[in-house]
Image 1 (tube, rainbow, N blue to C red):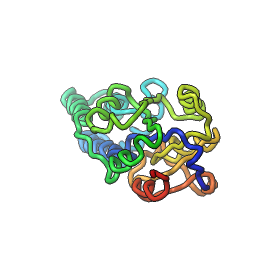
Image 2 (cartoon, rainbow, N blue to C red; image 1 turned 90 degrees about the vertical axis):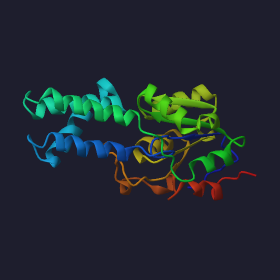
Image 3 (cartoon, rainbow, N blue to C red; image 1 turned 180 degrees about the horizontal axis):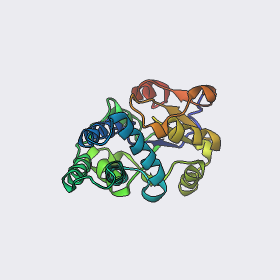
Length: 236
């Protein structure tokens, strides 16, 4: 698709794995938890059960590190048949706390792009997850001042993006979304008539994966790197 940048008023950025590293930390902790629980099951089975529990709990806890921690604790209790030692539960909790204290590792080119676009377009963050954690990451990232508005969403469906459009008092065609998740950052935007640019990340949570073959690529653009925005978007 060709994006008419003369119509675009607002550019929305996903945060995790679009502006900074996030998903690899979850995979690292999954591996550590599997080692802690290796007396009960294989790592593959543990990962399968964790994913099942996470999906079951989405309606209760939503997304983010805290939801992940609670699901890991539930996993340990279930997979051990209620015999998991308190020491292991404590170690799982500590792994979660370490995740929350991780320094923010910006992706290459992210700040350069924001610097170039600031003042030319209204920039916002449209991310999902735990409000406190996402606010903390934005503050620690040093990027907060680039954004006119920050929206931490409980989910990223068409109705959620339409709420943002209404809040910003714009039309869907005046919004451009940039993100790494085809499922959450791209397809819902296409469906409401907005524009979208997909920048895939090398690690994607299973829940966010969709088969690109099933979707017409002419409805959105795909870049390999965020810096490609600078050669595509007019910033003069």
